[in-house]
Image (cartoon, rainbow, N blue to C red; front, side, top):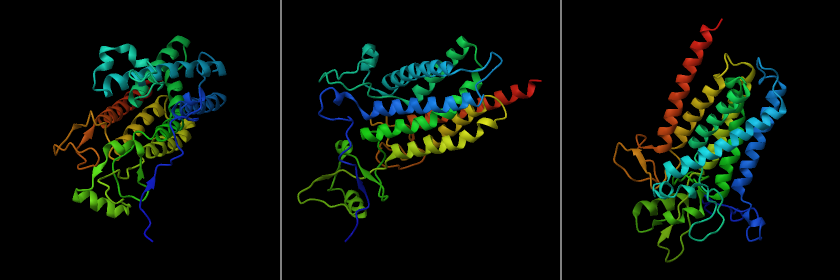
Amino acid sequence: MFTPLYIHYPSWIHPELFPGVPVLGLIRWYGLMYICAFATAFHILKKEQKEGLLDGSEGKASEDDIYSFIAWGIVFLILGARIFSTLVYDTSGEYWKKPWLIFWPFDTLTHEFTGLAGMSYHGGFIGGLLGMIIWCRIHKRPLWKWIDAMCIAIPLGYTFGRIGNFMNGELYGRITTVPWGMIFPRAESESFSLSLPWVQDFVNRCGMTIKEGQKIVNLPRHPSQLYEAFFEGLILFLCLFPLRKHKPFDGFIGAMYTIGYGLVRFFIEYFRQPDADLGYRISKDGSKILYQNTSFANISTGQILCFLMIAGGLILMLILHIRNKQQP
């Protein structure tokens, strides 16, 4: 018997923790994952505080400092992530005309509770960084020490965020024939016609079963959310965490995180399907096909932002290195 070379998205997974249950049905996996992410960040920051890695000339850092620091980070992160998502990634122009909808948690047509559906990592990065800078200035804490500490805590928390995307069945990747390719129900709107020869070949290579009379098919895709959770989250954390006591200067880990995340995300973007309304920002072959990677020269919005992160991290590393050399 031939074993299909793909996986069906688990049918028991729903965006809500308790689907169909009054009140409890409002609790969503995505929100729960955010709570887990912030709790993880707090735990790691507390460990660094106990190790004395947050202390400065102003005195020892306290647990209250961590609570306050994370609170500022959370508020600014959510503001940046939501604003960036609605004003940069949304092409309808609705949020520019009606900015009050940016933080409106209900569907404008059905009036159903949706939460703040749609967050941008890069917007969250900018917002969170701004929040950390303001907090450190107000509380007179060593900026680069605290940024380094947070950049160690972020990746492991980020893992939960991408798992939340997976639980929502969103941000799936391009079609693939790898054995771990997954059929996402939310990708049914992008199904393919079985009348196309390449689709028939794809179906045969995956060992998919086609029903009699079926005309369209939902093809397996890369579970790119899990790729990101693993490489941009867990692996990046394991690379940065040992550096906390061996960094050559304050700000080094912040720069390394920025470069590392940018590099990993840039390459994972080749497996992740770009937003249909944005497409490619740069396309060497002029292709508008998003469900397959036709050329490595086709660059998405996310890749451009990642390139800016890499460049910014390298420039920051150089500036901090020179400044550290000049200090007595």
